[in-house]
Length: 123
Image 1 (cartoon, helix red, strand yellow):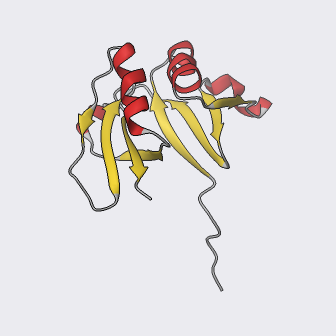
Image 2: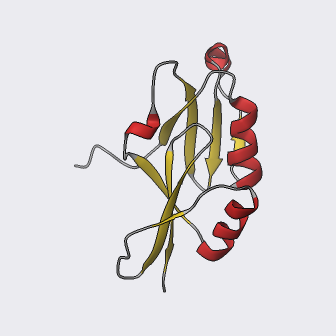
């Protein structure tokens, strides 16, 4: 019997007061949808987002430097070149990934320093 069914959500750290920058980046640029947080958690700040059937929770943490880690979320995109153009329009540096068979890939850092990988599956 499998006890783990699926990934329910991932939690990403943002800086205190960074909700507006997070909305601009994740919702306006990347196309995520903000969903309501439970009223019991509103006092903690941050945001909850969804894309497809996955939730991303953006949580506040004061003493954390995400630039010191390789951990990341990887988002599949339909057109990596178009994503790179959108990022360039906002002066966001895109770093090409190590080539892998059947994938185009690369990564960026969000406004809070979190690493994000974008990949396109070649079909």
